[in-house]
Amino acid sequence: MSYLWTNKMQLVAVLVLAGLLFTLAIFQYNWLGQLSEREHERMRQSLDSTTRVVRSEFDSELAELYRTFQVDYRDGGTFSEQLAEHYAERLETIEGPDILEKIYWVNLNEETGLVLQEFTGVSLATLDEWPEDIAPLRDEFDGLLRYNGEQFRLPLGPQPLQDDIPALVIQQVFTRSIRDLEAYESISWVVAKLRSDVIVDELIPALADQYFYGEETLDYNVGIVDRDNPGVLLYRSRPDLTAASFAEPDAQRDIYGLRAWHFNPRFQRTRRMWNVIDEVSEAKWDLLVKHQAGSLEAAVAATRNRNLAISLGVLALLASAIAMIVVSTRRAQRLAAQQMEFVAGISHELRTPLAVIRAAAENLADDVVQDPEKTRQYGELINREGRRLSNMVERVLLFAKIRAGNLQFERQPVDLIATIDDAIASNSAWMDERSVTVRRELPESLPELVGDPSALSSVIQNLVSNAIKYSRPGGTVTVQARESKTDSGIAIQVAIHDQGDGIPSKEIPHLFEPFFRGERARRAQIQGSGLGLSLVKQVVEAHGGSIDVVSTPGAGSTFMVQLPVADDSESPDPTLR
Image (cartoon, rainbow, N blue to C red):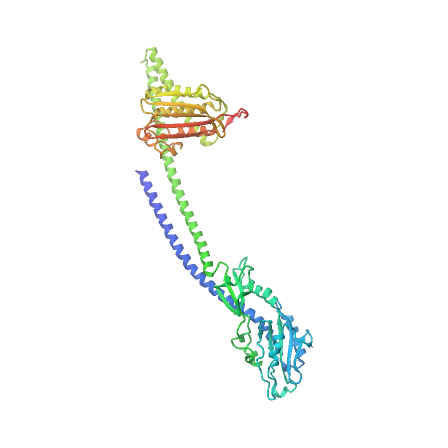
């Protein structure tokens, strides 16, 4: 009753724990879903902010160049002197890649016409021919209106940003009053030629590393395309990327333009910037950003799946631990029950022969038996029951030694046929009591085994005794032995067949477990401790052999033992472990 109650309580506890784990798994799943949504929104906002910063950083490089080389005539001095001063200041303050390659000065004057000069770093040198890279600008400069006698007209001229060259066209704006400009009856521009290789190979990668760089690699694929030709990548963060890789970018931002907001209001007012740069200047390129996972959604989903797998793994580990605890508890309970049955069985087996010995001894002591033949029979009875007690004690001691791991077997020649005959003879009384016949089917000789004679004798005796015990009254036990060849060499096979009721298939896997006894044996209260077959298996395996069982319900069981024959070339070992 107590055992059943304990099982029910364990089942309830397991169901409660399983319910808690399932509930926790649902909460974890929902929580990770909400967390993923918030993470996606955070990453989207962060990426949007980052692309704005990258655009501002990139375009501010162009704006800084524009501000630097728009020379103010009100400061006095020649234009070349002021240009040299501005150039020197820029060299002192520049940080990062230098995108400036050359500086040209274009002057449009009524008397001299269109004049091109190259800035050498300290002065201006007049060029007779226009360099090929800026030659396309000459026609636009030639067509501009000049000073009309009233004031300078401030035509836009060429676009401030020429991405085909690439270059900045910086118009020089006079801020003195008109009466002070008699000596400046001309219009001029600074053409700042840019290094396209530095922009693509140094400036953009530096910005990508700074703003899109993860712990070890770029978390995002970064590309830049010309807005007039979006099918070709001007820059890509990986060589295997193509324009198709950015078909649906996570973020897109226009860059490479001069924007009015890069110039403070005072600069715009004093230099009349509103006449030079539109408020919404059209950018030339598009910055495309896409997460390496394929998209932000895919990256967040991958993170969520990973976290979900880890969480479920932890829950599965907890469930496995609980299951192992339950299984271990059940096994411990089953082992305790078997040990109790073992104690009860041993007590019963000890009590029976002790009772017989005591009764016989009392009769002899009280001179109840006077006939010499009867006295001899009493002596045989006491001897038989004493041997039975000795075997039982030896079996228990053998089991204890095996469990302790300090069992040593002798290694001596063993005559297996003689061992089988001794086992049959020692069970003759048990055969008579059960009305069972033992039939020998043995060859005249077998190869000699090397092992522990006593241990191997106990193996055969135990199997023969069990076959007699579980055979039906009047049945026959057959003992067979033969030589056989195996993959590992020559072996001797011993088969012991009984004519009992057979063993249920569900009990066969547990036959060789310590203290295990079948349901029929327990119900019929057949004598036994549950140690015999366990000891048989361990002794056989210690000798390098194996044991198997085949049983047919209603037709009996056959136990088969296979023992290897020692090679003559092997040196004898004093012990077997």
